[in-house]
Image (cartoon, rainbow, N blue to C red; front, side, top):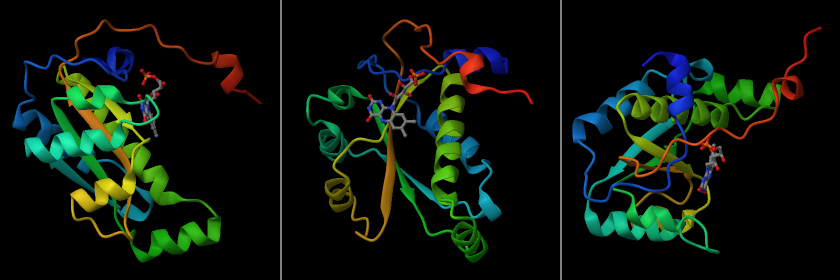
Length: 176
Ligand SMILES: Cc1cc2nc3c(=O)[nH]c(=O)nc-3n(C[C@H](O)[C@H](O)[C@H](O)COP(=O)(O)O)c2cc1C
């Protein structure tokens, strides 16, 4: 797919074909594209957990369902948990000196790589940031000191492509 079409086709998919599992190779291809993402000082402060165990997957999905939100996670054929790992020293020092959370910028980029690659493989994804993080950590034996910025649901979409609702170019871009 050319890049323009890829960007148009990537959308947050919240309806999946529940009869169709995501092939392991496709998930690994998404992780491989994520692996190649840039990061501050090349710190690569991330780990991906593919939750294959059906019971665990259901329990993790359940952690995202609250206040009437994210019910779709329960039907997601695959769930990937993105863990924020410690950055290297240069990234850490740079973050402090610059007053910028480089690791969170890195996480956004790596998640975008993952989701764009998934789109190119014909898969739908949704980045989910609203979930019971404490519970997910406990389910997956992740130390409480670590953070889980995102869960990503993956599956074959069972919905139409939407027109993107975005600010106008003139609202987000200034030429000086
Ligand atoms: C950091 C982040 C957190 C998000 N959390 C959620 C979420 O908890 N639930 C959800 O349904 N969508 C979530 N989204 C998806 C956004 O709602 C979506 O990207 C945005 O509305 C634009 O729509 P599109 O992705 O279909 O283009 C999240 C997206 C990002 C980048």
